[in-house]
Amino acid sequence: MTMDNHTRRAPAVLAALLLAGVFMAGAAHAQLPPAQTANGIQYVTGGFGQEESSAFKQARSSYALALTFAVSGDGGSSPYAGDVQVHVRNAQGGTVLNATSTGPYFLTNLQPGNYRLDVTYEGVTQSREVAIKQGKTTDLKFTWKRPAAGPD
Image (cartoon, rainbow, N blue to C red; front, side):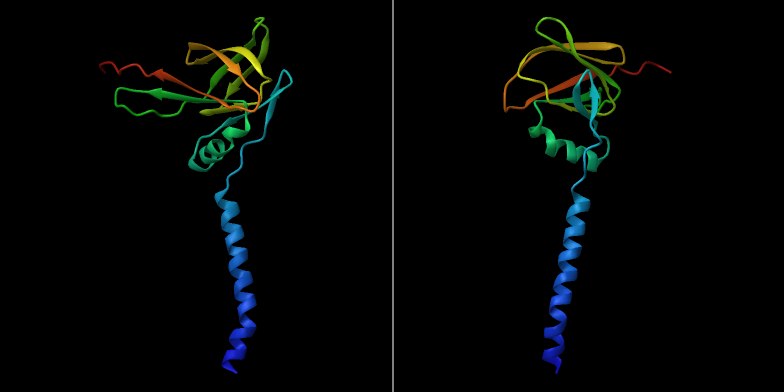
């Protein structure tokens, strides 16, 4: 009868293990924050914390433009930056998107074409020209230098 009890319990144990695996896989797969819209263009921003950061890294290739923002200091570390103003202009100089990135990652699906990006962090603006190509991700990183601490 011992074999019969094991045989009857095997499907229940297997089902419990599968359910636990599905639950753990779902917990490990973090989701992106909700998409926002500015000027008719959807974008996603955020990325603080390990789970959200992983979600952005996994989703990058699904977007036409992926931006990362960081701050470098004298210690060689590169902490991520948030509260970055992102201004995207088309080839004619018209504003396509003007939004604030709340975290170190900013993902959006711009139409193929040439754009000028102006990104501003703590009053310092960096500009780049970018060409968005159909079916490709343009991945850019912007880094600002943290000023050296002065004497107290």
